[in-house]
Length: 292
Image 1 (spheres, rainbow, N blue to C red):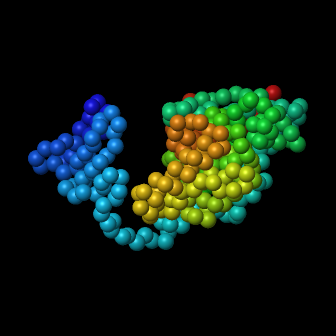
Image 2 (cartoon, rainbow, N blue to C red):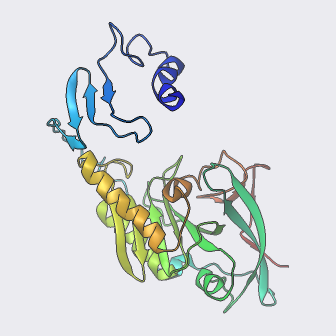
């Protein structure tokens, strides 16, 4: 009952809407959900403003059609097609085979991140996420922010820990608060390029690539944030993305939400931006890699 109160009357009171919604009472909108069992909460009947819109998990009414201007559905502007070399993370000179790395640490079910310091191996003057994942117990992947709003070629590459990827994979999203550039996290540079190019092709959304193949995709072609398809279709496609996370080894409770917050440069501790890696606690930029 407390949970129901939190998402009905409490929310209505918080936003000053109790005269219209939040309770079943005269003068309020007839927004009603009927359930048989509060412990196994499943909506049997959904009424919105007095109209039955869903029953037993099936949508019951026709949705109005809308036309959207082309610029709304053309929001992923890449200066060029992404390539594996765009995600190279070069080590500083005189690295002696290893470097000190500033790594974004994901905290499960929380918006803040940790500012991790790790010592990582260098091969061919590069830090390779695939080699770190394959040959050590370190949970490290690359993260890239790709500018998508003005057709600029900027790609910022960093490192992130906490997704638990065990496969050759990449996951990309144009839902990336607050600037909503494209975020790509992966263990393989080629897969990261494939993921980014796929989102450019479909106009935005979320995609999972494993071993060079797309295994999960939800298209969000309105500004790269919303879909023009029906809710049940979007839900089905979104589940392929969550299944893709799991297929890549990720066991986080809500990984796509964690991914979407990694560029939110107003919440501590460490974030990625189009200008570089940001230490939010100090309001300053830090290098991804440093000499030990």
